[in-house]
Image (tube, rainbow, N blue to C red):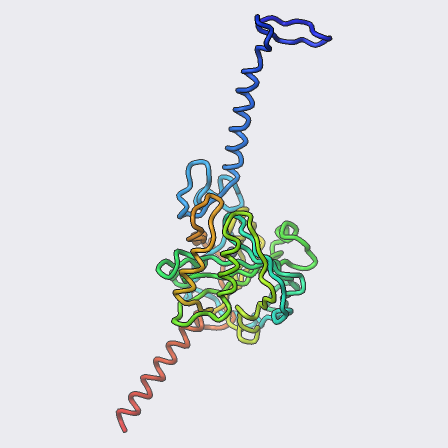
Length: 332
Ligand SMILES: [Zn+2]
């Protein structure tokens, strides 16, 4: 190889006059592209059931790429009802804008689908340190009616599905700002219980998910009301409270968690339908989108009222009352 002075620049040339470094540069470009692709992949994360390859991180390896996921105040957790501390001073919530008809934008981000909420939907009370505005909501599910997929578990029991409504503390305007405050985010969690009858308002959500099937696709649900899917604040006085984190990377420890005792209903038909609508960024069916429970590490879970998820208690009282009626009938 010769180096020739050409127009004031040193130019490497081969014997034929063709620049000899071209193949080398081509190879370097190939290596750079490969590295870029590798970086893009290592920045990705997966859920456990996605069977990630070595480059992409399943939940046990999230802390490698996202160090905060290895923190000591992580979510979700298993709530052990006999260890919960009763805190009867935890007040009820006030919901603002939950009855208003709004247009909700639904977006598949390749990991889950989220539903954007306007700033007019707000939250106060509930023993939270300030007022919060709604940001968006999303669901965590398993594999349909046969495989539960809630993130929080109660006494080790996983529920079929879980709804998270993400709220940002005022006056923050973005999730990134709110994540800098240890109580910058208020997350409301509702566990679903499988029922024989359909939930009357979930079919519009299932249909919208079907229109946001692929990574990056989005759609709108017009005239949506948040109180169509969750009860009024007056019916939600019983809840668990603890401090934790976001349950997806970067797992920021900035969340005041509220897990309501009252469960929401979903039929087996709707459960099977909801898990069949979307695809992950990898093209696989979007199922089993939940993070395994994390250690409490000395944190205390408080409860505003005694008891466990309300529907189960109601079932128990119905059983006791029915038994009592049968005894009275038989003895007369
Ligand atoms: Zn969530």
